[in-house]
Amino acid sequence: MQHLPASWIPALKAELDAPYYRELSAFVDAERKAHEVFPADTEVFAALERTPFEKVRVVLLGQDPYPTPGHAHGLCFSVREGIKPPASLRNMYQELSTDLGLPIPSTGNLGPWADRGMLLLNTVLTVRAKEPNSHQKKGWETFTDAVLKALSARETPMVFVLWGTAAKKKEKLLDATRHRVVTGAHPSPLSIKHFKGTKPFSKIDDALGSLGERPFDWRL
Image (cartoon, rainbow, N blue to C red; front, side, top):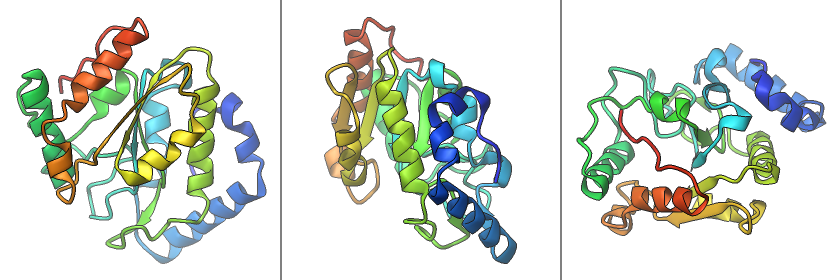
């Protein structure tokens, strides 16, 4: 499996040496030999690569990479350039427009957000093609929990965004006395009625403001 980006190694070295991580790495390597697995090996840690440890301002937590061929590239909710935005992302864009008055982006690639300090982290970092959740409970959740704990322990505070039931369960890992935690409904079509009109992006900007930080640059 791909090496961890250098800025994250001090915070996560104990994970890399743990037996579960070696087993996880062996599992993913075996899966790649037997099946098509997304994202590509070079993009498994794309979220950590695009947003170095010390540069994280906002954490947006997703769940599983897109299992559709050509979609996943290592950033939660994001798809490759040229791919039509999936339903959850379209719902996010609609709220972005009504909440902040920004034009609906034509791209589904959220890379610019990652480059500006938004960690676009899925809780599971690989998936078998066309088989959603096929790599759950293989060790990724332990690893990404460690990422969240390392960020929570970081001296400089940030904003954690937990949309949906699965993400909200991670709140117990976070020090909400120092950081800001913004919760809400998931933008999926299944829960859109609870997401729509909630001004989720203003809430993130307000949380940043309460930390003395400038608003996030949401343009794509």
